[in-house]
Length: 268
Image (tube, rainbow, N blue to C red; front, side):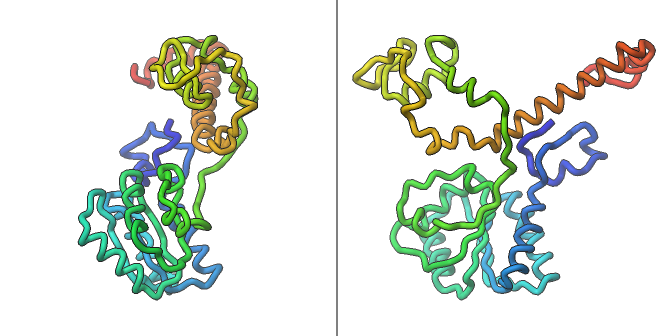
């Protein structure tokens, strides 16, 4: 059960008969972007994709659907993960000279950070930016020029949901209660700027265990913005319900247990 893989190849049930996803494949975002183009009447756009399989699939699908919907492509840039200055300058020049008001971004994680390099020296002309759901998941933008330029970007986000009881559980966390949780210890130390006995001494004060999340702006960290975590939660419950149904069938119909041994392999 996958909660994060968006590769459309997993749709092939002949090759991947036992793979189940609780997230749509990445090409559905392409179709959604085309719908936005049609709605706003945007028919002259630019496209920047990562130079990998993700970018290749997106550009191939976009070009095909755009031709069908009479949307023209001003430029197509394949962004490299380790590009050189001359290549970056050429990309900057392309964006500057482009008459397209709308630019799409389909960048996977290792390429998204490199994209900020284009905002170091000059301010990019005002454009309407549209990004796939990868961008907000992978990019932290410390560069103010990049933040100013991309502020207001239309981004496709993954489904958000509620996880009952998680907020109460989170507020009950304490590194002195869960002493073997290294991740919690590191998070606690950084949030409250204090030292724990089991971590490196980085701050002036020691943690007491009486620190409270009420004094921290958790909204800034999107702590309760359940998107990726909600998909994990859904995947776990999907498996739990499936196993429950399977076990119920075995106990109510003993002969079915024998058939399971015949048709199910050990790894299942």
